[in-house]
Structure formats: structure tokens, C-alpha cells
Amino acid sequence: MKDLLQSRRSLFIIGFLLLLAVNLLVLAGVAANRRAPAESQVVLTERELKWLNHSHSENSGMTLKLNWRVFVDNETAGLYSTWTSPEWFGMEKLKELGFSFPVDLHKNGVRKRKRPHKKEAVIVLEKNSSCFRKSVDIRKKAVKKVQQQLELEPENQELRNRLERLETQLRQEQISGSRLFAVDAGLNPDKLRQQYPDRHRYLLVRGVVGYRYDFATMAGGKSEPRGYVSRLNNGVIHVSLPYRKRLDTLIAEKKNGESPRYRIELTYGQRLEPWITGVYSVEE
Amino acid sequence: MLPKTKTQAQRRVDQIDSFRRELKQLEDDGVVALEDDQLGSIDRYHSALLKKLTEQFDVDATHRARQLSLGMKITSFLGAIALGASLFFLFYRFWGDFSTVTQVAVLITAPLLGLLAAWVAVWRDRSGYFAKLFASVSLTCFVLDLSMLGQIFNISPSENVFVVWALFAFLLAYAIDSRLLLAAGIICLTGYLSARMGTWSGCYWIDFGEWPENFFPAVGLLFLLSFFRHDHFAGFRATYRVFALLLFFIPALILANWGEGSYLPFSSDFIEGFYQLLGFFASAGVIWLGIRKQWIDMVNTGNVFFTIFLYTKFYDWWWDWLPKYLFFLLIALVAILMLLVFKRLRTCVVEEKT
Image 1 (spheres, chains in turn green, purple):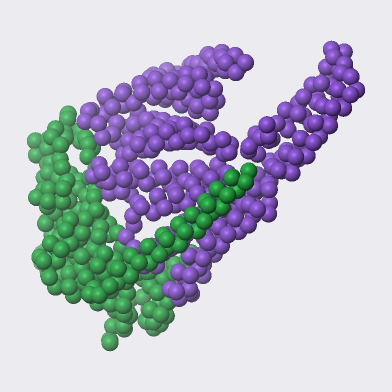
Image 2 (image 1 turned 180 degrees about the vertical axis):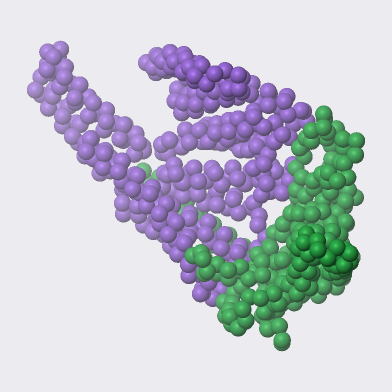
């Protein structure tokens, strides 16, 4: 009995040490991430960092969601087509990321799921990307095309509705569409940083990529796999108390319209984990 | 020889109680009549033993005490869950109003205080219920601690957090003899091993559940742990065994109906057939081993999964083409047949014991 009590005491002491050691390790990791110099630092607006409203729940914390996109060469695509495969994410990129594709994936026209099709990777997000200008141009062309059609068929109500929809999408794109686009992915952050050296324009973030089969390219019973960015590991960012108070003021000053109400300075550290280092009004 | 654990002590008390009642019955039936000094000697020995066992292990000496203990166990379990949930939501409700330093201080201090309370309770309360309550709260606070630190500092999620939680849960389970905390530790350890297996197989760790075979390595480890001696920890070996079996049979059942979730390089039909056969033979093997080793937990688990595999197969074969009344009649007849088989198995277990 005495031995049992003594061994219990040992277990409790080990438990205490475990709690302290793990917490110290976590905080040491945070310090290591925030050690200078920062990996990247950008200023994003409300378009790219959306405030998540928790007022309906019991969560008093404030978080911002990173709004990112991929470029889609399609006038009817929604504003945030994150599930679509971008042009740069073909077979070559998938092989570079280490995905393998077993033969005879198709048998009697049925696709077989034989290998895990998602993995962790480093995603390159570009701020004020040329993809945004291309996206706006596509929508402008779509609006112009329908306007020309409407001149020939002024009574066509379907065309009018379509024009209204496209004009709304164009306005949303220009005013509130995120300027942050995923433009590349890789496994080695150092190598990616060499390719994209501008630390105030390109963010390297950890995320999950995957592939699926694009039925649009299907021919003869086989289809080419296309990659897509599934999610970002740190897609939701916590706002600490001092910045939260400033942000609360900026959000309260204007109603939630289409134009952004604030700008956030976001810094990424050595472990590609982000934190907020500044909150400003749009005018500052 | 005095018992080493509370469970052994309780068994001894129940044995004494049964002996006393059986002896009275035998005397009433005129089968035996002990001398007064013999009865007195036995009674004095039992009274002294009961007193010692009650002082040392806080056992239930009477039926009423046993009923109250059961109530205390249930209350302690529900109290631990409610207190844990309350702490979770309390922190969520107010954390946004704290500075980062305060948040971190609260998160780190909470599990330490819970652990301290559990430690004090172990020494002050022999029943063990308060120690289990505080230990459960400490584990909940530790889970909250690492989860919230991850949110506050936007730390990338990692499967390593499971192994830390598992280690803490195991420490607590062995410190206060709690099967609930052992189960929590097993679940966390399984999560870690499966996530690792998933990563080695090339998938993102969070998606480990999409490939049921990721759970199989944990089966071997848990079964191995059940072979270690656990003299002072009642029910621990059975807990390891049952979880090992669950982690084998549930994935096997899933793959028996969904071959696409397997890593095996064969067609889905072949994989489903393979796991169906494996499920049947494995459950039968588990029942046989359980009878041989007198591990009733294995016999029961094997029975349950044998039945599930069987009924799943019946559904596949007959649901579409048999009239519904005939389908359920067949199920009922099979159930009756299985009752006869289980009765026979039960007789075997009893015979093996005697």
C-alpha cells in the first residue's frame, strides 16, 4: 500500500512536470516563430481579412478569416472559386508535390479511389495579383457582350436579368473582391521564397492541397487529375485585445457595405504562422 | 492475505455476505449446524476483516451502501462531464475580454490546479470519487489549454497534441485508478497513431479517418498492453482488450461495405469480400479465445460483432428480394438459433470456470 501511494505521488509529479514542459514548449515555439526577421509582412483590407461575427454564439473572441481565391478564366464563376483547379495546378505540379497516380484507375468506367488525394503543402498567396485585373477584365467583357446582345434584342427579359447579374458581379469584383490569389504551391518554403522574393507581396502559408478528376478533359474513359487548394491551415486569425478594441471602433464607424472599413498588417513568422501587428483605418 | 485493490476488497466483502446468507439458509434447511464457538469465531474473524477492509478501501459492506455507491459513480461521471463543459464554455464566453498574458496564465494554471485538487483528494477521500472528478477536470482543462493556445497564437495544427493528451490521461488513469481516464488516453493515443499512419501513407493527417486501415496499428499495441500485469488496477486489461477489438472490428465492418476506403491494391468487390470473411472468422476466433482465457469481455464483444456481420450479410442478400415479413422472420429465427448457441457457450464458460 505504501509502495502504491509512493508510485501515485511519482505519477502526480510527472503529471505536473508534463503540464509545465508542454506549455513551455508551445510558448517557445511561438517565440521561435516570431523571432526576427519576419518571413513576410503584408497589409490587407477587409476584402482579404473578413471579420467573423460571433455575436450570436457564446464566443467572445474575435477572429478574422483570410479570404483568398484562385483565378478562374470563366465569366460565370463565383467570386470565391476556391474549389476550382487553377491553370498552374496540373499534372506536373501534382507530381512535384509528391502525388502518385496508380495505373488502371478506371475499370468499367468506374473511378477507383486508391491513394490518399490530399496532403500538406506551402501555398503562395499573391497580394494585388495580376489575376485580379484579369478577373475584372473577364467580367467587363462578359457585361459588354450581353449589352451588345441586348441592343439587338431589347425585349429579351432573360438577357436583361443576365446583364443585371453580371453587372452586380462586376461591381462586387471591383469593390469587395479579394485581391489575394493562390498562385503556386510547393513543399519547400525556402525554394518558393527564392522564386517569389518579394516578402510584402507574396505570402507563404501552410495549407492542404489535393486533386480530383476533371471530367471536362475526359476522353476515352480516362481523365486527367487536376489539383486544387483545399484549405489553409491558419485560415482563421485571432485578434488580440489591443487590436480588437481598435477594430471594434473601425467596424462600428461604418455600416457593413461593400467597401472595406479597415486595413490589417499581417506578419508571418519563421514557422509560417501569422499574427496581427497593426490595425489601421482605410484612410491612414 | 489481504486484497491489493478496492475491487478485490469489494469482492471479498460480497463473498463474506454471500457466505453468511448461505450459512443461514443451510441452518434453516437443517443441512448443517455449527457449534456456537465455531460460529462466534467465524463471526469475529469476518467482523474484524470487514472493519479493516472498510477502513482501508472504503468498500460497501451492505446492499444499501452498494446502491449509494452506484449512484455516486454515476453522479461523479456526470459531474465531471458537466464541469468540463462548463469550463470550456466559461472560457469561450470571457476570453475575448482578457489580454494575451491573462489568457495564457489562466490556460496554464487551470490544469495544474485541477491536478493539485486531484492529488489532495486522493489523500483526503478514500472513496476516490472526488479524485476522479478533479482529475477529469484537469484533463479537460489541459485539452482546452492546448486548443486555445493554438487559436490565440495561430499555431498550425499537429497530430502531436494527441500524444501529449494521451500521456497525461494515462498518468492520471494510473494515479487514481480510473477506467474513464484510461479510455480517454486510449482514444487520444489511437488518434495519434492513426494520424501518423495516415501521414506515412501520404495523406494529410486530419483525414486519417477516411482510411479505416489507419486504425489497425493501434489494435496491436493495445492488445499488447493488455498482457501487462495490472494487479492494482481493476478492469484495465479488459479496457485495453475491448478497445483493441473495437478498433479492429469497426474499421473491418466499414471496409466490408465500402472497399474504396482500403489501401489494398485490389478491386472494391474483392476487398469487401475479404473484410466480410475476416470479420466473421475474427469474431469467431475472439469468442473462442475469450472462452479459453475466461475473458468475458472478449466473448461479449465477439458475439456483438459476429451478430452485426451476420445481419449485415443477411441485409445484402435478402432485403431486396424477400418480402419484408419473411426477412424479419428469418432474422428472428437466426436470433433464436444464436440464443441456443450462446447458451451453449455460456455453459462452456461456466464449466471452464469450475
